[in-house]
View 1: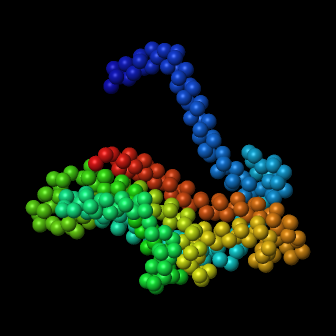
View 2: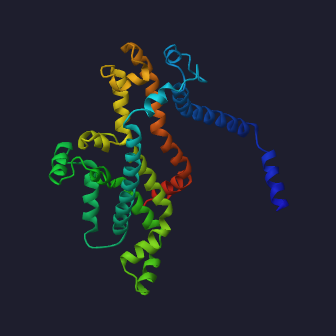
View 3: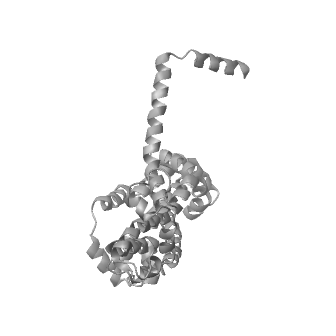
Length: 310
């Protein structure tokens, strides 16, 4: 062990000046890239806790100016916000659960050899490039009785073909076919093999699917705009979009009078709306950021393994 450490230190000491210069430049470039990526996030956060006057004056650059929580008060006191937060959690959890189960089942089926497999693969891939469009989809879902229901928020866009192909490649490359043969000899069928062998061995790709589907579900506001009529069923993103639109327009200030003061003019409300906008971004993205940070290890590993050619 000591010999190997000594050899390593000797190699490091013999590095040329060009190699050291390359490492220095490389580190500087990556630091700049990280700052470029993180600064907009930091700017949004500090703007959300700064005063409207400081934001309009362009003073908010590095640290908050005139610390204020009036934007968060306006957002969290909105009558629909907490209900929509709960709705988004329910839609995201159930929708992600359904999506990853259906995706994994389809991926497992496509990883097996069967008659007509090429046609089924082509059928799935075809839907990546051609769809019926929004109006036919809306008419079909309304005929099925899904309009203005919680069900439509859970099952719509249930499967992403891209995610399906990643999962199929992962199963084909990471789970040996000999395991299936051994399971068949023990009397196991496809369902038993899938739930007791494939699922336990696919935790990495399941984490990737949960991140992909979860983020998409959490950020989805368009589905509610099209299919949901009752305000109590709206998800968080749709409510936040309404808050921003109402505040910026300044034409419907009844719901914001309690936040901005009864005697304030519309121009004052619009100025404060700038702070509300940043607060809405923080409220909407914070949960997703925390989840991604927690699952990034599985995410990177799963994407790398699932992207191998199968």
